[in-house]
Every structure is written in C-alpha cells, then in structure tokens.
Image (cartoon, helix red, strand yellow):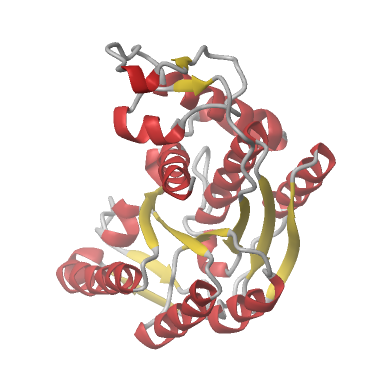
Amino acid sequence: MSIDSSSINFLENLDFFANQVVEGFITGLHKSPFHGFSVEFAEHRIYNPGESIKYVDWKLFARSDKMFTKRFEEETNLRCHLIIDCSSSMFFPFKKDNSIDKLTFSVLSAACLMNLFRRQRDAFGITLFSESLDFHRDPKVSRKHYFQLIYELEKKLQSSREVNIKTDFSKSLGSLVDLIKERSLIVIFSDFQGDKKSLNNLFNSLQSLKYKKHEIILFHICDVQKEKKLEFTRDFYKFIDLETNEEISLNPIDFKEKFVKEKENIFSFIREKSSQSKIDYFLADLNKGFDQMLKSYLIKRSKLY
C-alpha cells in the first residue's frame, strides 16, 4: 500500500491506519487460490479473507506464494523488538503537502507490523533511539500493551522535528545487548547515515546481539530518488545536514555522478557487512509502501518456525 492524500488522514489514528494496510496486504496475498494439493497438505484449507491469520502456514506461503491455514497448530512464542532510529537525518524529506519523512514511514511500518503480530499472537516491543535509548518496552502480547505502544508511536509522530540530534549506534544498540535477554527477532528501521567507521561500530553492536542468538532484520529507510540517485527538479538547492546543521548551496547535476558513486559504495558496504554477519538486509524505499516490510517479515518468520 502506497501513501496517498486519503491515507494521510489516518495518521491521527495509527491503529486504524495499520489495520487498513494489513487487511489490504492479506487480501492481496490471496487474490488467486492455489490448486493441486498433494496428500502431505491434507490438513490445510484455503485462507478466507477476514479470518484470523493465527493459523496461516507461512512456510507453505513462502513456497507457494498462496495462503492456507492449518487446522491444528501450536502457538509460537516469537518475540520481536521493533527498533526505530529517531535521529534528525530521519526527518528527511521535510513534510510538504502529503509527503512523509523517513521517521514517519518507519513509525507507520512499525505500527503495521504490530498489527500483524497481534493477529498471530506474537509478542512485540518497541525501542526508540538516537544518541541513546529514548524509549524502550519489552515484548508482550496483551491488547493493553499494543495500545500503549500505539500511543507512544503517535506521540513520536506529533513531536517536533529538531535538528542536531545525532545517531550513536554503538551506545544505543550496545545498551540493548543487556536489555534483550530472551532470544528474539530484532527489526531495525534506520537510514544508517554515517561513514564506514560509524557503520563498523553499528555492526560490532549487531554482532554482540547475534552472539546471543538473536535474529536481525535491517530495513534501510531511504528516499531512493533523492538520496540515492540525487534526482531533483530544479538547478540549485540549499542542502542542510540535519544532524550537524551545516549548509551548502549547489547544483545537484554538478555533483550527481560522484555522489551516486559514493552513495552506492556505502550501500554496498552495508549489504556486504549484513551478509557477512548473517543479517537480513532490505532497502525500503519511501515511495513503495508498506507491503515490502510485511512480506519480508513473514518470509523471515517462516524460516524461524
């Protein structure tokens, strides 16, 4: 689901917005029934839109791309931590009309995943961080817990966008090593702004989490058109570093080739480090909606259970 003018009205009610996205996502997964079951699938039946997805066989979905439910399946005890980067660089692009920034996109994505977790009775928690941990709640499955986290996310959406808030991956994620005690799936939303030194610090912290048997998904939040390809419509712009407040005026065309090359170098570095660390990495484009996160999570879940 992409974001349009009608969707923006939902931002005042995250639960309603998330429910609409997830319902649409589930319906989209089940547009055409899958025929030709063999005997080994005798205990499955076709998923009917509107049903609980608690008993959906995600392993079968990963193989067939169609949705079926098992008649009998024990509840899993998946615990998931959703971790959102709230540093100033996540405020790009500044909101105009119906556009959204990277932080808003991450918060909405997290709300959609929480809605999906509830349907599967999976435990979930939220962590917000920048230079340190700003907010942390351990995973639970209760309805009260869900709405408490929705309230915290709504507060974050409505908070002012201040510059000069930096990212300290080492300090923030290092704190989580002691806080997350039970084996969990850790999902991180960030634009991963920084040089290779800071990114190395990030992966050192992630390795500490991997050492404790946690599974990790990185969602690299990016406006691909502007941040990766440097595609702008005018000749001159004033560019502001949201984490340092430094300014520079230039014509993007003059620097595009060099910029795109250096940016791809950083993106490749993150992909390679993720692969080496056995961490799932996904580039999440602001302009491609939320299904990319939901489907990536379900495929990962099917591998864990």
